[in-house]
Length: 422
View 1 (cartoon, rainbow, N blue to C red):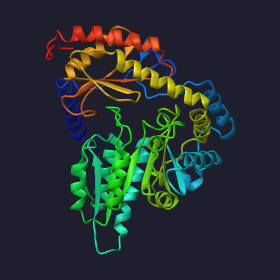
View 2 (cartoon, rainbow, N blue to C red):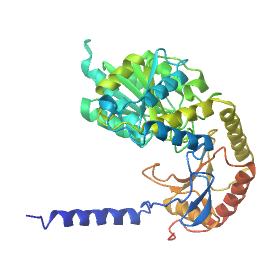
View 3 (cartoon, rainbow, N blue to C red):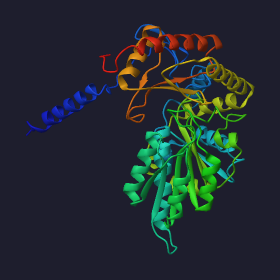
View 4 (cartoon, helix red, strand yellow):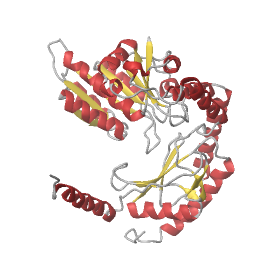
């Protein structure tokens, strides 16, 4: 017998929730792209200048990677067929993981890497599996503690929440710009197992985590340090190996996570750590164990991307990004919007209210730009913004044109009341 109540109750609750989002100007909407990811994108029939993707090196539509994808599909097919531990782990995965581990070998002894479908999956797997090590502590201390940076990405937050639910770990938040409170909390912590979890580059602000200082703290309190370098891998360091290369850091207590769908231009992510820790991820990381492996053609393509990242082309593209960022900071003049001091391709302009951010994004759309408004819960209340990102495919002229347009729009938007309907 079918229920005559539950489905309609659920629909009513859903409508109520959507109405609440609409009233707060927080409902998000999909936009359909009709062309490859690039600095100009066809959206709903219009060609827009895109300053919103994470394709920092401009590799998402690179001809060599398009060819590598076709080559990988011809060699390995288009699906893996099973999870890694059943029959889905191919030669392509092995070759890629060896090269990913090599990128971090100067920073982590006996490094081993695992390739994941997404950064979200990599973060959840690493945090839950490594927090679970504390369940096997045999010394006189007991307990598990996780210290998470306040502005961490949602995937880290969800990984911490899931780990806490599974292990009864205590969770503490810290401000990555002021580590005094973190030190104070750790001094009072007698837990047998401790994790410090942070982004490498904070995705909405573009600033770098003080990884060297966090490592010093982790060493003083015998904690693991998990660094999600989603927005640093491919961008930071001479060879694009990420934040550990950038700061020249070495430690076996670091667990490094890199994303391969941003600067690398393809898809997936990886976790890299000492081989013993990685073996525990294989044995205890439930999302890894029970997920179908990424198609080997993707792994084959990422391998080709690594060669581009490390080579002369990658180095030249990073140098061009640095030039764009320098011009941005030298030439952008705004009176009312908060300009970031970020030296990464992420350059947010904090506008404050949701209404103002939506209006500014609408004005940009009318001028032929694609820069969405970023609102809570992605960013804290009262800090809605335009998250502007640069690609190595952007020209100096394109950045200067955007600067000119933003200065015009700021002047016009500021004349509107923040309560005006957008």
